[in-house]
Amino acid sequence: MNKLEGPALKAQLAKVPRWHFDADTLSIERRFVFQDFNEAFAFMTRVAMAAEVRNHHPEWFNVYNRVDITFTTHDAGGLTERDIDFAQWVDGIAGEAGN
Image (cartoon, rainbow, N blue to C red):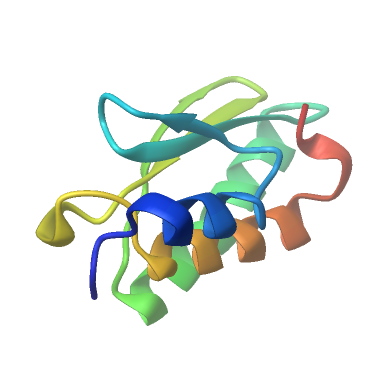
């Protein structure tokens, strides 16, 4: 998988407008806020199972009802289409939890 750069990066980032691009770490990140810990943990479980199937694991942080997710492809040295595709999938299952 090739690292996204230039116009290709810009075009792919447009597909995930709720995600913040970090130019220093070449990653995208997003915060999700749920009603309570149970909803946050159920969401994390769904993402974890999808990550195993995809063999592509996010970096994340959880406190009570909040889940922060970061995607990047370390082997490629930055964002790839795998990250964008997974972020779109996460958006689809998150419902109204995103801010």
